[in-house]
Amino acid sequence: MTTPWDDWNHILKLDPDKELPDGVTYGDLCATGTDAIEVGGTMGITEENMSAVIEACAEHDVALYQEPSNPEVVLEDDALDGYLIPTVFNAGSPFWITEAHKEWVRLEGDLDWERTTTEAYIVMNPEADVAELTEANCDLGADDVAAYATVAEHMFGQEIVYVEYSGTLGDEGVVEAAAHATDESTLFYGGGIHDYDSAYSMAQHADVIVVGDLAHDEGIEAVRETVEAANDA
Ligand SMILES: CC(C)=CCC/C(C)=C/CC/C(C)=C/CC/C(C)=C/COP(=O)(O)OP(=O)(O)O
Ligand SMILES: O=P(O)(O)OC[C@@H](O)CO
Ligand SMILES: [Mg+2]
Image (cartoon, rainbow, N blue to C red; front, side):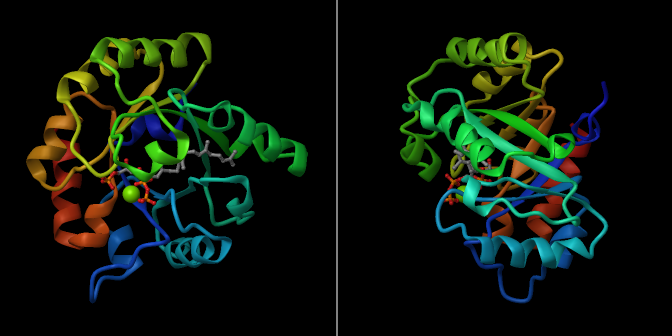
């Protein structure tokens, strides 16, 4: 089976709760050469701020995915190419592994399965909002992360394994171990990518690098550098 992310090197993750730098537009960010825009964040996400960003990106020629942090903010919008639904493998509560998902299905009934894919998150930065919210056990070695990645691929059939260091650049050895452990699954890496070198080093191991805060903090040129690195690696 081929999936869109088989061909991706770079994702730009836009947080609807964060501003863009002065003079930067969503159109500029869509035109950085990134393979896809993923709209999501942990805190402060509402239907309103989600739909504002999705609307602003919809008119541009780039793949557009929503990454909802809870069922209440999922938007039915034809402009979306699909939904990337997190499940946190190392969460402290089953709520963030399967229970939020069960509630979503119970309340919504018939979901758009053709356009819905889960991302098997392994959350690694204990300081990140996503780690606090999900009470993730981040005290993991490269061997633990590799084992989680193997479980995600072989036991849970996950198409996407996501090593998440949101807010800080991760341990390259951990990402390398996850890369060795995954075969069919696509490995996403995100966290702290801020320039060509940090992007290149993570893209050596991950199939797809995810760049987030940089877009909100630095803007277009900085993001472009990371796209170039992802494509070079
Ligand atoms: C069942 C449905 C539709 C949703 C549940 C989805 C789950 C399990 C969410 C838990 C993990 C989560 C909150 C993912 C959101 C994406 C993410 C990791 C964003 C990065 O967040 P941070 O960078 O930590 O937070 P801020 O940037 O908002 O501070
Ligand atoms: O914001 P940064 O640190 O780039 O992280 C990107 C992404 O993995 C967050 O979910
Ligand atoms: Mg963030």
